[in-house]
Amino acid sequence: MSAAVENMIPAQIERYMRNARGQDVPESLVKEIDKMRDTLVKEVTARYMTLAEQTRAVKKQCSDDLEAFLQISAERFGADLGGKKGNVTVYSYDGKCKIIRQVSDYMVFDEGLAAAKELIDQCLTDWVKNATPEIRTLIDRAFRPNSAGRISTSAVLGLRQLAINDERWIRAMHAIGESLKVVSSKAHIRAYRQDEGGDWQPVGEC
Image 1 (tube, rainbow, N blue to C red):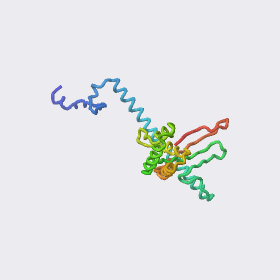
Image 2 (cartoon, rainbow, N blue to C red; image 1 turned 45 degrees about the vertical axis):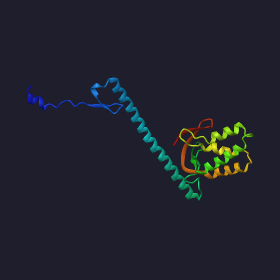
Image 3 (tube, helix red, strand yellow; image 1 turned 120 degrees about the vertical axis):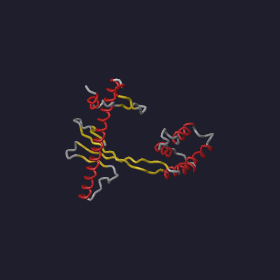
Image 4 (cartoon, helix red, strand yellow; image 1 turned 180 degrees about the vertical axis):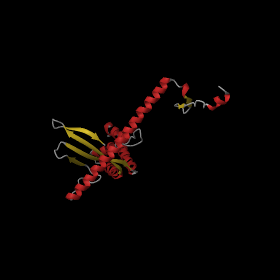
């Protein structure tokens, strides 16, 4: 074969695979088992991503359909079945299926919580001889941030269940209630179906 003909044949293009360090490695240098592993992981991940997209679409469709029905029903009967942000349960005609929408509020404390903590600390200082270790532990845990830096609303609100008549404590509990704010709400829709025994079995949630 002449040199001129050889020059007309395109050279094989080297393909590369990027490793975990961001380096492009010639595919010819990558072990077959590594190629197989790479293909497997990426294909499975792609399938789950597709499934996640479909699930999001189904959730949105369910939410939109339920909201549309609630609006139609409210207009027809002049009644509010829970409102856009309310809790509501809707049954099928035969009573064998039901849809429940529950709204969860995400609540946080504003700067008023610091004032409540100061009042509580004053109480503890004066009660140093009489305060039980259990109360101290309960208070410490209530105001201890979690790994995300957030204070548990349920733990702090639980302090209001303590029957303490100290005027500062009462003001602290009032400050806690005033400092609690709802910053967002999220609706969950759950579908159920009755089994042969009459028990409600979950079908799906979005």
